[in-house]
Amino acid sequence: MSAVITASNLGKRYKSSAALDNVSFQIQPGRIVGLIGPNGAGKTTALKAILGLTDFSGELNVLGFDPRKQRDKLMGEVCFIADVAVLPRWLKVSEAIDFVAAVHPRFDRSKCEAFLTRTKLGPNQRVRQMSKGMIVQLHLALVMAIDARLLILDEPTLGLDILYRKQFYQSLLEDYFDEDKTIIVTTHQVEEVEHILTDLMFIRDGRIVLDTDMEAVGERYIEVMVNADRADAARALKPLDERQVFGKSIFLFDGVARSTLEALGETRRPSVSDLFVATMKGTYA
Amino acid sequence: MNTGSLKNMYWLVKREFWEHRGGFLWAPIITGGIFLLLNIMGIITAEVFGSSHGARIGGGSGLNLVINDMDAGDLSKVGLALDVAMYSAMGMVFIVMGFVVLFYCLGALYDDRRDRSILFWKSLPVSDLSTVLSKVLSATLLAPAIAIITGVLLGIAQLLLMALVLSFHGVNVWQLLTLAHPFRITLNMIGSLPLYALSALPSIGWLLFCSAWVRSKPFLWAVLLPVLAGVLMSWFGLMGLFNLGSGWFWNNVVRRLLLNVFPGVDAFASGEIGNWSSGQTLLNYHMLMRVDLWIGVLAGAALIAAAIWFRRWRDDS
Image (cartoon, rainbow over all chains, first blue to last red; front, side, top):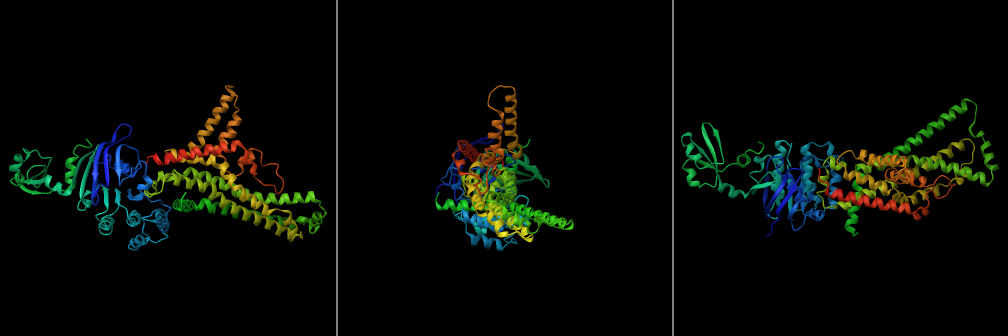
C-alpha cells in the first residue's frame, strides 16, 4: 500500500528560527505514530502543514492531496483534534451533530449518538457548560463517527484527569482504530501512549532526530543495569545516557550488541520517556 | 453551485444564526417590544394627564369632523403622518440591526481565531470560500430579512395601536387606516432588501476584511484606518495640496466603509430619501443606475476576496 503521508524537504521559518528544517519522512497506513519533541520543536508546525493550515516550502503529499491547494477536499479524509479547548463555547451538542452530519459526507450520525450515550452529555448541553473532559468526549464522539483515513491528535488529553485520559485512548483503540486507519499523535504524556504506538518520531529544533518503528527501538536501544564495579567498562562502550539508581548505574546504549551488554548486567528495553530524555539532552541549555 | 455546496451553504448560514441568535433575532424583537411598550406608556400618560386636566385628545367626534372636512391633499398628509409613524417604528429596528451587522462582521472572522475554535471549523471539509461567503450572506440577507419581518410586524402593531387609541376618541378607525399604506410600505421594505445588500457591501467587505486580517482589536483597526485617512485628507485639503475635496473622501470612502451597514444611509447621503411623498418607494431601484453604487460593490467584492485569502492563510491560532 502507498504511504499516507510523504514529506520531502519540508521547511518553515518563523522570523528568526526554523520551525521545520528540511524534514523528510513517510507514514504508512495502519500505523499509530507518536510525534514527540520538546516545546517549540516544530511538532505543531508539522501537523499544521499536514492539515493545510500553514504555508511551507518543500513537497508534501497527504492521501494524494496537496494540503496547500486542496485543504477542503483533504478534510473529507482527515480528522483532527487539537488540544482540548477548541470547540466553540456557544455550540450545543445537538447543533454540533447536525452541522457535522450536514457538511461531512463520511459522518455516521447513529455511531456518534451511540458514543454519546456512554457519556453524561445531553443534546441541549452547550460547550460552555462542560468540563474539559466532557468537551473532549464530545469531540472524540464526533471524530470517531467519521470514517476518516487519517486522524491527527495534537495534545488531545492536555489538562484531563487520568480517568478521561485512559478512557480516551481506550476508546480510540477499541472502537476506532483498524488497519486502514492511521493515527498521528503528539503528546507530552509519553507513558500513556507508549504501549499503543507502532512508530516513533522524535523531533528537535525542526529536525527529525529519530524515525523508527517500536520493534526496531527494542533492538537498537538497550538499557543495562550495571553494578558500580563494572561501570567503567560500560562507559567505555559510549552510552547515550547514564543515571544512578540504588547504587547501581543504568546505561542506555544505541546499537551495541545485546550479547556484549548482557555480560555487563541485566538488560531491558528502555521506556520511550527515558529514550526521549536521553535524546533531547541539552535542548533547553 | 451544485446541490451539495448549496446544502453546505444552507447549513453554514444556519450555523451563523445559531451563533448569533441574540443579535440577529432577539435584538430586533426586543427593540420592537421596548418601542411598543414606551409608546403604550406614553399614550397612557397622555390619556391620564389629558382626562385629569379636562382636555380631550381629538376632541371627541371633533377629529372625525375635521377628517370629513379635509380635501384629498389634506387626506394624503394624514396618510403620510401615519406612514411616518410606521416607518419610525421600523427605523428603530433597522438602526439596531445596523449595529448588529457592524459588530457581527467585525467578529465573524476574528472571534474563532481568538478562541481557537477555528481549528475545529477548519477540520471540516468546508472551503474557506464557502465559510466567508456564508458570513457575507448572513450579513447582507439573513440579518436584514429578520429585521424587515420584525420591522413590518412592529410597524403594523404601531399603526393598529394608534388607530385603536383614536377609535376610543370616536375617530373612524377604518377610514384612518385606508389613508395609510401599510401594504405598500411592507412591499417597499421587502423590495429594498437587495438594494441594502448592494449598498452595504463595501462596509461589510471592509469589516470582514479587518476581521480576517488583524491579529487583535478589529474594531479599532476598522474604525481607525478610514478615520485617520479622512483626517489626513482633510489636513492635506486645508494645506491646499490637492483639489479632491476632503468632504468627498469622508462621504464616499469613510462612510461607505463604515456606515453603509445601516439601512438607508446610502439613499440618505445621495438625497434619494428626504423629499419622498407618502407611499413612494422608499429606496428607488433607479439607484441601480448609479455608477458609485457599483464601484462600491466592486470594492466590497475585492475586500471580501482579500478576507477569503487571509482566512485561508492567516496562521496564528
